[in-house]
Image 1 (cartoon, rainbow, N blue to C red):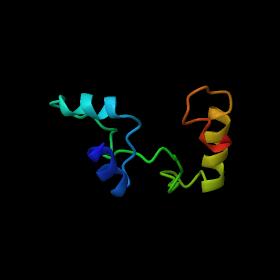
Image 2: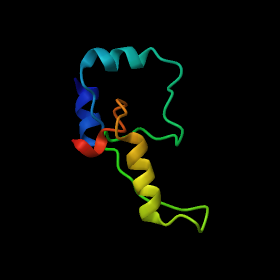
Image 3: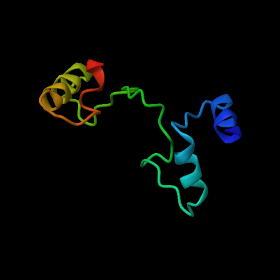
Image 4: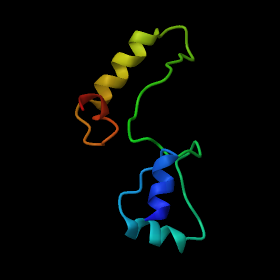
Length: 80
């Protein structure tokens, strides 16, 4: 319980004590490709075009079209 409290004070959410107990036994922690642990609130921070042919709005429209029928949680993030 102390570990969960200390984590909460530092902005880290630990859903239950069993998860924390399991982590104590871990030798390796795997995180996403950026090396961060996410907040659980995905958002787009920047849109950059590598080609002058596409403006920011074009890229966003294409991305939205591709994700429209996706069942992946990140594709649905804007619907929540």
